[in-house]
Length: 324
Image (cartoon, rainbow, N blue to C red; front, side, top):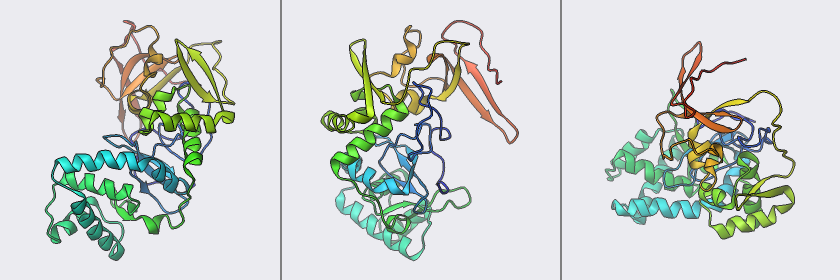
């Protein structure tokens, strides 16, 4: 599948759907979203490889995606994301004319010398007479990425770089609007389901009408059920995990698997109502037992080991991690 650009905010690819326990099909993202794609800004590797895509939100976050998917994902979701990003920049005094000037400088620079870091591009923009602070240049470059002019280049000495989109993805796949909606719906539901219409709209920065159209177009590949007055969608071939046997534990990151991946149904992971309703917890991860949120965890990575420490048990019981 090719090599990957940088690291997404979530863990390694190929994990089962966090709600069904099943392996998703390998259809494009290597990240904690279990191969359900989240388009927006893109950071790519060469055509045929994987790409980083962010969640299309006010604070985009990159994920990995395949070169074959970059074009249609951005075609589908970039307009809404771009509107948010451009609006934020306008409040800081950077209008479309500034964005265009930066884009011209950046694309000329990358034409002459690909794989430039953000600071190197900022220096090139400054040499052209535009002194822009680091945060703002990052935001402007995100808009240039949304416009499919640039994307990620080859990492250099551990730093992410930028390259021309047309060189990294010379033949992007395009889908019409209805096809793209259906494809995104299936990928999200496969990786995140069971999930609701509002969960998907929140995660993908799509309107509810578009999500409903996508669900209708993909109906033959999905199934649904009702729970507490809400309709939950899941992949047609998935089955509920068996309740038989010993309890099953999972250690997951909380960004996509709780906060950004869901809106309406994130706390089905806490049917007993034990978990404080917070936008941030005092650790990056959560511990689940039989799909219920029981504690948060920290992770320490060394060259020889990975250590997990459970803190803040919501059950009021002592806890520890055992592998085996």
